[in-house]
Image (tube, rainbow, N blue to C red; front, side, top):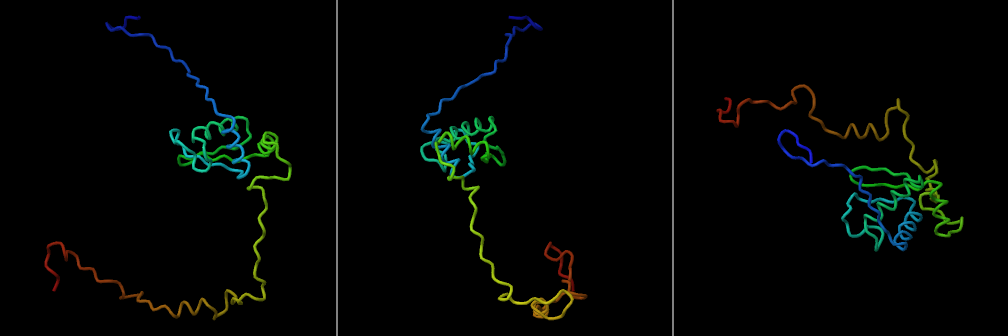
Length: 170
């Protein structure tokens, strides 16, 4: 105890509290499988959520802590925005998870799979558009169909005070 200005105060020291969290190996494997299949994982910053919305049987806290562990080893890239964590699998992470899950090289995450290209309509089947300086085409038809009341004298008449207790102008 130390006396200070007539009051007795305790000396306090600050300790950094380290808490180790044990996560079942089956839960870790579920998280890793989901991450490898999708290539990306999202988790809301809610440590008290009982389940993760995309991974069955795993708490949200377990997902966050497991993927933060991978982020510290630079196996995933972590981003945080609007109370949500986003983790993207890196090339080193792909090789690590492939080895951990004992997967063949042919299996790749969904973010790496190439999508089939969309079929485009050939140029000959498309309607021809007029050149920028030419008259005609859809643009002029659009402009002529429109009836506007804009221009001089088309503005509404402003009558100050009407409706606020004043008499209507005569």
